[in-house]
Structures are given as C-alpha cells and as structure tokens.
Amino acid sequence: MFCSKCGEKNVGGASFCMKCGAPLGAGVPAGPGPGTGNTASFSQQAEKNLIKGVMDLVNGFCVGFVSVVMWPIMIGFKIVKDMCDSEEREE
Ligand SMILES: [Zn+2]
Image (tube, rainbow, N blue to C red; front, side, top):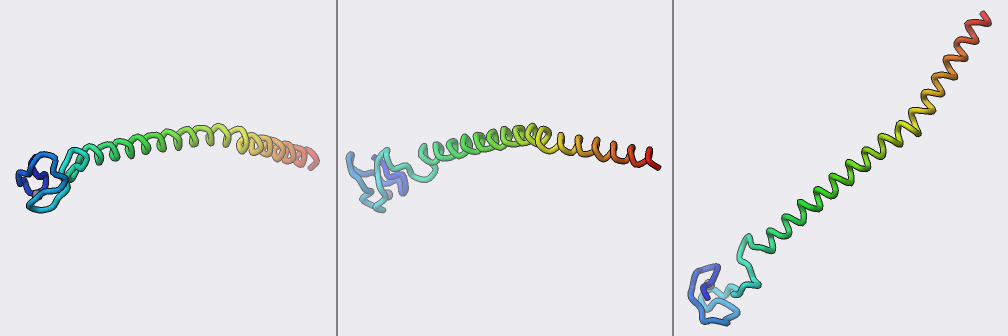
C-alpha cells in the first residue's frame, strides 16, 4: 500500500500513512477521483435536465402565449378595426 499523497510505502491494511498521516485505502480517493467524477457527471446530467425543463417551459409558454395573449390581441384589433370602420361610415 503506497501513500497516494507522499508515495511512502505503508504496511497493508494501514488506515493512515506512517510518513505524512494521509488517509489510505480505496475508499479515500486523493484529489480528483471517481467520487468527484460522479459528482461532475451528476451536475452535467442535472444541468441537461434543467435545460430540457426550461426548453419545455419555453415551448409551453410560447403555445400559451399565442393562445392566451395573441388571440385577445387579434380579437381586440378586429374590434378596434370594426370601430374605426363604423366611425368612418358615420362620417
Ligand atoms: Zn504519506
């Protein structure tokens, strides 16, 4: 068992390095290890899910915007246009 921090050879089964005192063992990765990688990939996956959720939200918002906002505006324009036409006819 070699210390991952200082490289000192320690007896098998030792929990800590005899030279520098760093923790030994597969469960204690030194620096960037599998644990850090998993965290990064998890963050990227979460980021992808977040982006996908935002895109779905944007798409849903666009549909909702057209149906909820654009229709009243279009109907409103038609009413205003009819009013203008009627006013022109009265004059
Ligand atoms: Zn050491």
